[in-house]
Image (cartoon, rainbow, N blue to C red; front, side, top):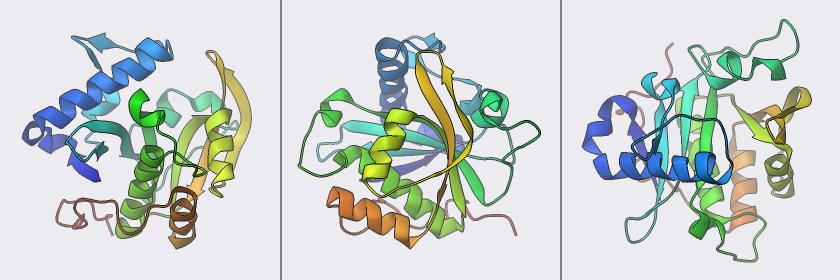
Length: 215
């Protein structure tokens, strides 16, 4: 199940927010050795102050299995402000119908679960959640900076992206910026690759949450 949490409402979800930031620290700082800011066990950056939407995967017993952050590309975002070297010179990605996903992470225990499917259940749940949210609010694309290993995993699940620019090595990994087109085809491919059926969202009233796109 995917729980939607808006940044301004984070105080209503103290357990989920704490577990999410601790999971991000375990993944990005401890395992991947990224140069990220850690404070009292939390990984947090300046984009968490930009009113993102968090998608948090919650297990059957309430455990936090993974999370991802969505931000509009019309404001501060990681591709524009941190990874602009991935963009061809003079090109930008800025549209009210394109949001950026970042800080995608899955708990190692959930990642280790195998089902014989093309894609891990929690990974697929987060991807389905992003696609569902995008369809509900009228997004055309989600843009993300991913390593080529993740790109290959998504290709196996028939979730192909349009690369923006050429791959570049950032830190220890070869990285791309990609656009994933939001729509029923992407959602159907994710369902087929993961065995998920039906909606993964705990709440589908995203317009009541204030997530409708501006006219």
